[in-house]
Amino acid sequence: MARKATSAKSPAFEDALSDLESLVEAMENDQLPLEDLVSHYEKGAKLLQHCEQVLNAARKRIELIEISPQEQNELESNASPAEDSNASGDLDPESDDKDDIRLL
Image (cartoon, rainbow, N blue to C red; front, side, top):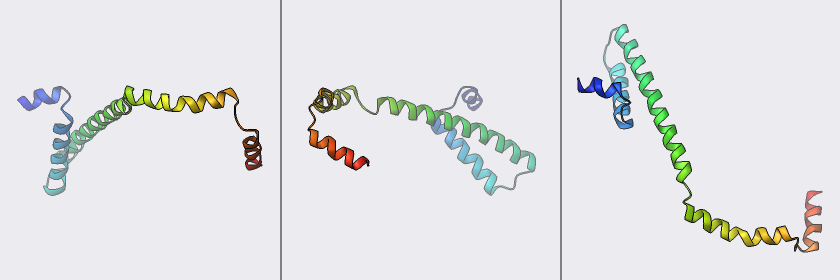
């Protein structure tokens, strides 16, 4: 009974993955009737979809927190002097000529 209550809610990723592995193992190793194989396949497809959704949500969360605010501030402060000199037009005229040559 407790298992059905858990499956009514979204199971934890680890539980869903374990259930999926059990279903696949049973399908590969047991001599199941066709109806049971189809039932296992349906359950497995739902579990797989759930696991993929959980993984995608985790990936998005990781992307959001990949660079901490402190690291982001350090990157911005290190990049500021270079951006300021480029924006002010203090570039060496010879370097402009070199750039033109490389583009041609």
